[in-house]
Length: 243
Ligand code: 6PG
Image (tube, rainbow, N blue to C red; front, side):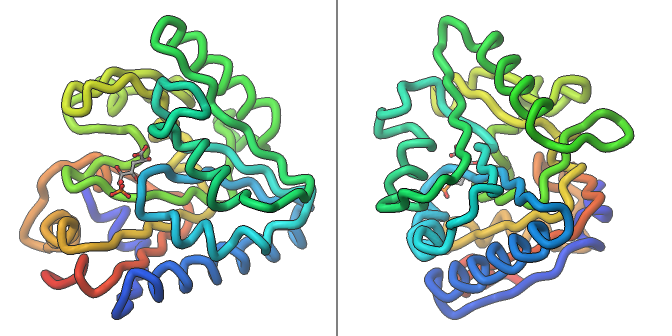
């Protein structure tokens, strides 16, 4: 059912990926200022993939508060210095040249110990983040990309991870990419105070059309989000041609 997501969504379309990323960066900073003022911390779950790199590079000199806590929304089961690692991409963009005391929590994921690794990350979330009345960790911001199949984080279509409502972090094998993954689950995504989607490129215009089309109720991982907070979409023109 997509309407909880859509009714909570505001959409910004920019001429280019760079401008969409800059607008997302401005909101990222603004939410940080408000979160730090409100409760003294800024809890963020970062997305992987390629889309956010420009955003991360534009933010990297702006993160300078030891009360910022950066988690990963998902990770591939590879060493942290592997070219496939989301943490490596984040370290080389968002944290490049940043020697401030930023708290970043990598997901150490190995194929052989994937379930235990997921459990360890869940424990870290529960230790560091405030919990809502259901005992679910609450992020001030969850930053998400979007796959052309409608996946978010590593919640891929036709995987059991979509059904996980008890664990906050789970592990899975993604046949399509022949990749073992760890991901936050819907309870965590749904409890976030704010969600930012950054989606660019013409490869995503079909999935964006499906998500926002009123006459199309296709079940997608992304449309199954039932957000308790606000949802902001930053699209470039190419991703929004069908809107
Ligand atoms: C990952 C991401 C994933 C990503 C989408 C879009 O680990 O790859 O968390 O959910 O956001 O796959 O990826 P692109 O930005 O590369 O298109």
